[in-house]
Image (cartoon, rainbow, N blue to C red; front, side, top):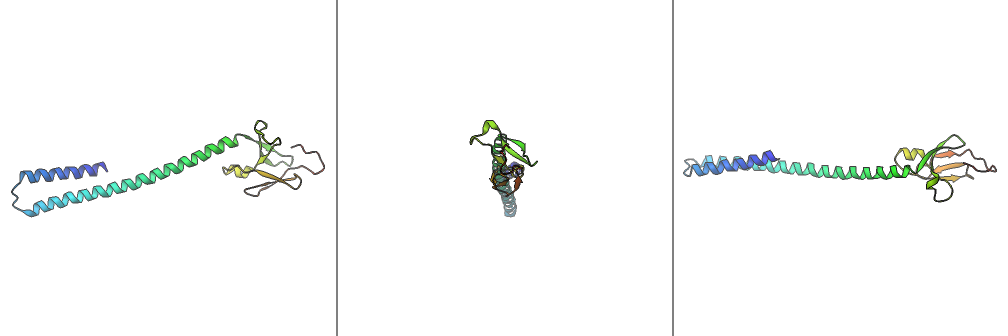
Length: 153
């Protein structure tokens, strides 16, 4: 872009010098040709500027998109650090909230499949606590707990 602009400026200077040194042109066509060449260089410079502006806009949008993704990733990393991988009695793996982060008094679990996709999604206990069902992906996990037996997960 700078090169094209400099070329246009230099072309204008050459034209000025040319006209200044040949005040009495014998041929009008030479002047017209020089002016046309300068106009052509200016038009090329304008096209280059427009191309660079479009590229700049696309890069700014991409940067904003990447910053948003990074912010989401950082938020996910902060949230997932509150959980630890836990093996249920059934042998299934889930993420369990660390005891120091429990707010409800009882542990809760999040889906490993959703966590692998960068999403925090809680499991809901169903069927008297024998299963966990993900709110988001509907994954079913057997807890290994049997009704009538003291629940200790």
